[in-house]
Amino acid sequence: MMRRRIFAALVLFGVALGSALYWNDGKIDLTLLAINIAAASIGFSWLHHRWKRKEARIITPQKAEDIFS
Image 1 (cartoon, rainbow, N blue to C red):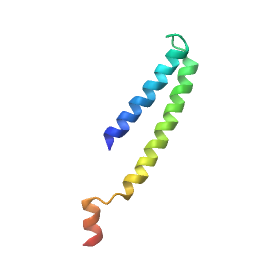
Image 2: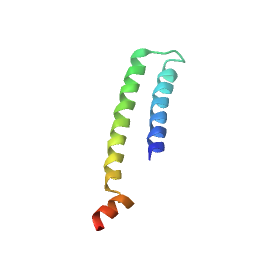
Image 3: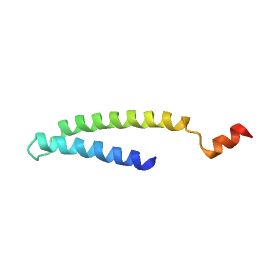
């Protein structure tokens, strides 16, 4: 589960950086980069909380033991 979050963060922030460089002909524009990083952060936060809710519903062996014991 942690690998999925790391991969998502790398992709989101990599695209944010790449997009800022692409639209400014390879030069760093701090305003555009800040906007892209903010958008990537919002997207990652949304994904994290969505996955967290789904993972909370999964029955693990420990949860099953607590329920049925």
